[in-house]
Image (cartoon, rainbow, N blue to C red; front, side, top):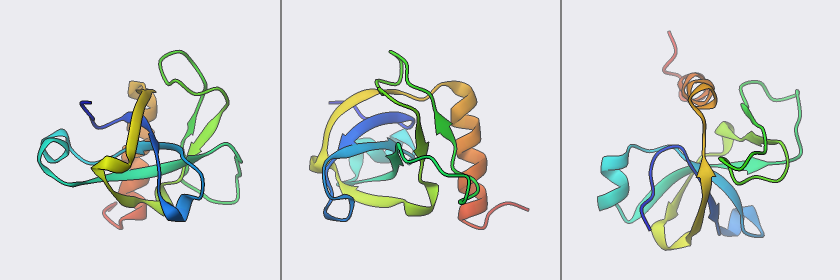
Length: 110
């Protein structure tokens, strides 16, 4: 399975409890060679209390069934064997929102 940045995947991790969707955030060059993949988990429990969580709308392209927020504040490094399947991909507008949110959360925004 080829995993690319912006892919919405089904991931398994003890901190997440049950398998849940996540977005791949690391560059494609690392995805092919690294034993771990950086992802941001998704939640369908949408809140305005935490700033900088982009919302993804359900569509055939995303593979999601309900609106979900990208939890950029809960980024994880998962072993690549913890990625079960690619559900879909972010669109360009949501990818831009994610990039801006990651800059803020990582303290790279100036």
